[in-house]
Image 1 (cartoon, rainbow, N blue to C red):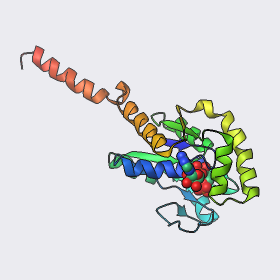
Image 2 (cartoon, rainbow, N blue to C red; image 1 turned 120 degrees about the vertical axis):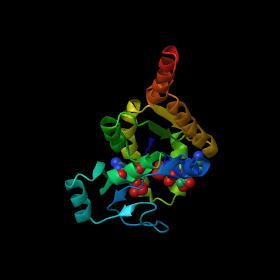
Image 3 (cartoon, protein in one colour; image 1 turned 180 degrees about the horizontal axis):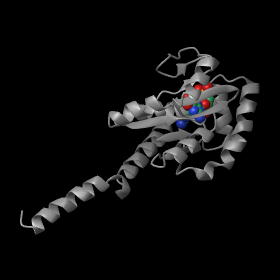
Image 4 (cartoon, rainbow, N blue to C red; image 1 turned 180 degrees about the vertical axis):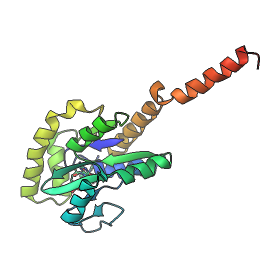
Length: 202
Ligand code: ADP
Ligand code: 5GP
């Protein structure tokens, strides 16, 4: 489950609500070269790495995708996603728009969700409310213009107006997706084998 949005769109809060609501989901921690913000914990929020460490991970093919966002490197370690899949859980990735498209290309079974606040005024209020400086708000809104242009490539749109509702909508998307026949062919085939045995008189 790949969740993207313009900065301030609500990826972080929706993700944390989703993980609390439903134990099927687990966060796949990504890595970044940006400075740790107050309250962030290495290994929980991000793996904080140096530029040299990041480049080595990239060179060694350890990243599923990577991007430069606002001047810093970000990337999804293959290991992070694999670990969650091995537990039989749904990896939740909150990454930028370019990263979301890369993941979908490499891994078509991924479900991509684009989050949008109900209107621009709300987005600006939320960015300011998060303590972003005016110049940072301006940069993020400029980036948002190009992100919006490619939104049609996402599978789903969720409007993040009331937070609990947005979280429930993302969970509902997962509910529907897990019921897709293509994701359940093993069960259909098992039923078919039982029918085969029955018709052979077993
Ligand atoms: P992102 O991770 O996409 O940059 P955040 O999750 O940090 O965005 O959200 C930006 C700010 O807006 C945060 O301060 C967050 O608490 C607030 N916020 C997000 N969604 C809502 C919502 N539905 N209602 C009220 N505040 C919200
Ligand atoms: P922030 O620095 O505010 O936590 O994140 C900045 C942007 O980078 C956000 O849009 C966030 O989702 C995105 N991001 C975080 N991790 C990754 C990643 O591994 N890959 C990509 N492509 N984007 C990421």
